[in-house]
Length: 296
Ligand code: HSE
Image (cartoon, rainbow, N blue to C red; front, side, top):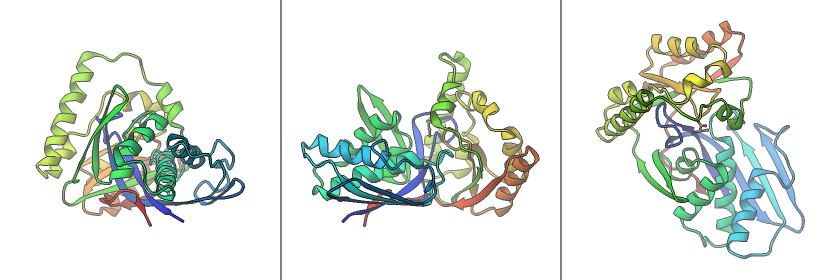
């Protein structure tokens, strides 16, 4: 029976809204096997909150693969062992989706290839920037065009280390997208387009310092400020403590600092800044995950 190990992911990387993402060395494990009745169990993160019925994300993903290949099986034993905190901006739902898709595909003898899996995952998630790096590992650029997903995996710059501050409260991606405006000023679009272009050039040139300078954003973070108490101060504290860049991780509420090497004091500074705003948070140092999801 396949056990799929899927990494956490940080989407957007600042300016690359719905386009850029990177896998991180923190994993969920998902087991998929056919069974006479539906049996879903969860341990670790989300063990008291993740639904165990037909709405379970892993189950929906498994069913989607079976339907795609025309297989009638409808009941499975699914087990999720989660290390990725749920609804914090670290790709927990993408990890569940990818685990279900890859697990089902493995049970069926791998009828679907990577690009089909990325397309199904993107359609189910609504954007590719978590699911693509969860599958491919590394830093991924992904573009959706007429339901087709174009993706390119890049090697993260040498020495890049992420430090996250994970608040205790949850924030759903749906809620964090509902505050975004329908239109944005041209100057803000230019601000982001220019930074994404140079950020990718910096990644290709293995220039970590330049990458760090290109991670500011005007498309989504300013509108999400009020959803994450203390966000500006947490950003400032991370910079002050030596981070090269600091952004919301995905739609938040986790804040992620990008550093050269492990910087324990960056994590401590972010946790302290959150505490000054009454938000309890924990910190973790996470290396980029180069492998992507693996079927064990
Ligand atoms: N690009 C998405 C957003 C990522 O910012 O809403 C959600 O994890």
